[in-house]
Structures are given as C-alpha cells and as structure tokens.
Length: 445
Picture 1: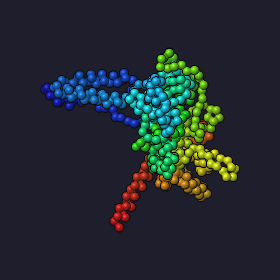
Picture 2: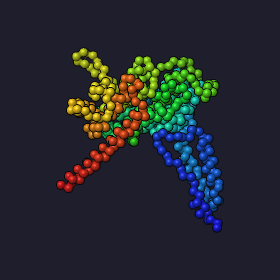
Picture 3: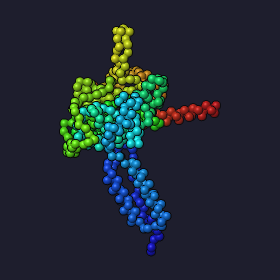
Picture 4: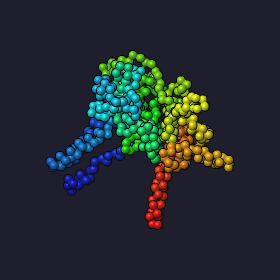
C-alpha cells in the first residue's frame, strides 16, 4: 500500500538536536565542521519526497533559519587585527581607560563588535603567536571572558576580548562612592561568584591549552585578582578576565615548541619582529604567592594562592593589603588579609571536618566560630549559614598555605565550593519559608 506524503514525513523524522549544555563542552573549531554538518543536512533533506511549491519554500526558509541559528553557537576564527584598527578604535589610545579591569584597557568597537583592548608588553616570538592565538581563541567557558584576537604594535601586544556588561569584583566589594552598599548583597550571590571563579580556574588548569610548551607546569592565569574578575549585570555571575595574556605576551617562556609552532615561524606581514626576549613576571600586591616572591616561576599552585585571597575578599569585603598608621610607632603598618585570617582561625592546618573533641576543644571551636562570624562582611548583616561561612574560610586558608605542594588543586576547591553553594541555597530557601510562615501567622492574629 502506498503511503501518503503526510505519513512519509511523519515516519521519517529528522535527527533530534543535541542539547545545549553550559560548562566544559566540545565545540567545532573550524568552518569545515560546519560545512560538513550542512552537507549532511542537505543530503537528508534530498531523500524526502517532493512537496508542493509552498511547502518547499517554507522548508527551505526553515532550514536556512536553523543553520543560521546553529552558526551563532560556533566559535569565530581568531582575528589578527592591524595596529591601525586598534588605534582607530581607541582614538589613538586617548579614549577613557577602563578602571574596572586594568589601567591598560580600553572599551571600543572593533569590526562592529563591542570589545575590550588589553595592552601588555610583548616579549615572545611573533612567529609562534599565530598558533598560540588560534588555540587560545578556542577556549570557551561560562566563567571566562572570551578572547577574540590580538594585534602587535611596537613593543606591545593588544589582546581583544569580548565586552561583558558589569563591574569588577573589586568595585562591587569596595565602591568608594557607596561604601555601605555592595551589589553582591547576599551570601548566596557571593558563594555563586566563588563557585564560578573556582570552576573557571579549574577549566584553565585542566582543560585549556595555549599552545604546546606555553607553560611547563600546565596552563596558568598568573593575573588573578579581584580587579581581573567581572561580575556580570544583571545575572551577578563571575567571569575571569585576561585569560591567555601572559602566554601570548611571552611572559612565560617555553623551553620547546611543537611542530605546528615551528611551521608558523614564517614571515607574516601581520606580525612584526620582536626586538627583545626578556622574561618577567608580574603580580599585584597581596596576590603573589611566597614562592613567586622568592624568585620562583608561576604555576597552578600560585594561581590557587591568588584564588584563596580573592575568596577571602568575597567573605570579608576587605582589601588583600592595607596600610594603617600606628600612633605608637608613628609609621604605617602593613595589614595582610591572609595573615588576619590565619590569626583568626588560630590553626590553619586543621581540616574542616568539624570534629569535636573534649570540652576544652569544644569551647575553643565555639570561640573561633564566633570570631569568624564577626569577621564576615558586616554588610551581610549576619544573614548567612554559620557552618558554610566557617568552612569557606577554611577552604580559603587551604589555598593560601605557604607551601605550594600543600595547596589543593582547583578541582578539589571547585567541588567543595559547589557543595557550600548548595548548602547556602538550601539555607536561603528555609529562611524564606520561615519568613513566609511568620508573616502568615502575624496576619491571622
């Protein structure tokens, strides 16, 4: 028996679209993959029976719309901008600088796209830049600001990132124009930001690469601070800025190159020759780990240290380093947020199991818990779960241990903070339910 056109179309459905997931996903890295998918879709559509002219037009329009929407999710190829484009977009660098992320950043429009230009001194090999830039532009994560391309001009490299609406974490925690107010006004928002950063840094350490040999100890960020983190508006989600900057600028030298990098050592008109190969490491006061201060090389463990400082900032709202005038010595004393946290807890080597020993230990633990509760940002007005606050402080102290080998990996830190976020959300839901019951009872009386 011959089937009608309606039966045939109902019996031969098209393939189901793959679900979109956030986080660590595999993406197509070239236009050839997109072309192959389009060809496969065309082959499947050609096997269907012919329809009327109206149906064919509607189907064609739907197919083009589907392909166009799919293309929006595919990453663009990395871009090598000319130095003239950068100069024009930034008004010869006379435009207002962005104080939210770095003093060497400008917001501008490049090729009809809202972007941020970040300037660093270039100390690498221009011939290897194309390969590393292509690898860095393939990195996609919800907690990492996306790199779009780069340009070389003089002794500097200009990295072009997507623009994210929002403010830096430093400004959200310490806005001089409104010191009594913080956009991250709830405990859950702060735990969400901490979890976002932990997952983003975990992705950089374990799933990202910026060219073979870019970092002998694994991919690192090396610029993490509350000023290099953007809190998006209005979602209040945290994003890490300046990913790949130290590798692309040549601040982390490579001891060897891959075959692909060797092939890229041909002369390119877009890549001027660098005149120096001086390697230097930068950091911001309060975020530099002890081994870096001693002349060591940046590593994932030094990133973990910087993350621990940022986590302490989220918990307290305080700066990592402050200078206070002493009336006794008539001098300014340096006050470190890390040292203050260690003194507060008393013994940073303890774990967060919450085990109770004898009565003396219980009394000491209770006293320590009360100190921590008073130490947490007062703008939260005590509205947070005590257990989660104490465990979060201990996670931060684990990250800022003096010995790098004793610091946890970011996968462990991200796991702990994810559990604390769930605990905090459950606490917040219970508080809302309790408040609703109180209002209802009061209304009935």
